[in-house]
Image 1: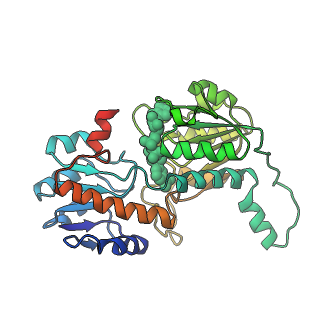
Image 2 (image 1 turned 90 degrees about the horizontal axis):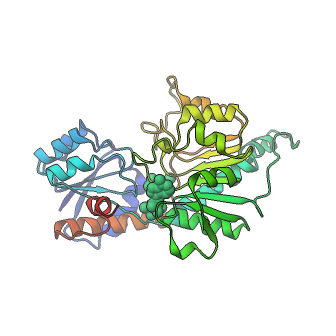
Image 3 (image 1 turned 60 degrees about the horizontal axis):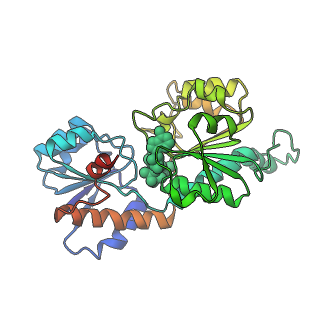
Length: 335
Ligand code: NAD
């Protein structure tokens, strides 16, 4: 089986090369380009393509892949909001994802962001390097005894609930399905109640029509003053312009974002020599209580290993016509 691996970084090659020895009939060619309507044509002669969060797996890309006879798309990530699911069904293209690779890695990064914005670690680091030992602008809040509101208690949200519980926080959550395994220490509430009661709000639900811009001016107005907001899920869960308005209203103690609306095009690229065009991200970064990282929640040795293992197993399953929970159609039907 020949796989064309798009947007390959050195760490992708390392993790996939370390497991490919277990799959003797699989051959992978790595390329730097992202999968999109233009680069889809490069997949001629391949059995499958492998893509990541910033790929454009829309109707045009899928049509080209279909014309080339490529019937398997291996997403090496958990989210699939960049895949036109209806089109894959129409064309009979199988899309498999890696739903549960190291949820703790992402949850730990969410807590790292919460702690960093709360205690202004990024400022403190730079201040001390500049011989400035004053504490001005560094005051944070104690998390112990405060309320954490977790939106979405699937694999990553559940891990975040456990971390917050470990910090001695009261944990409340909102989800369309309640996770029975958490109920000994998590109180399920409505989204409105979560917004009103939480000192820390962390987003862990997928991006769908129903969750698009779920954090907007209306929901921000419901939040407590000096709340901490963290998003490690998908950028478009938050309306960025309205978040900026909320920040200007002094609503937030801190905002930590691993994902943001304008990230496509930036993610995993070094653009430090470029003059950036007009951007709301630049405006966000101008605030002293905002910290942005570039979609690195997943980026641990354990998660990369797990992604490589599951993606190649997904390829074998696709080859053998085996449908599992990792099939996008399966997940959609279930929901
Ligand atoms: P999951 O499917 O296990 O859990 C998602 C949960 O969200 C489910 O329990 C679902 O019922 C719930 N949900 C759906 N609609 C909701 C709504 N309107 N309100 C509240 N909850 C709702 O997914 P997961 O593995 O925990 O991943 C969560 C998200 O994290 C993914 O969709 C992906 O976008 C993101 N992610 C980010 C990174 C990163 O590197 N930053 C890595 C992996 C995943």
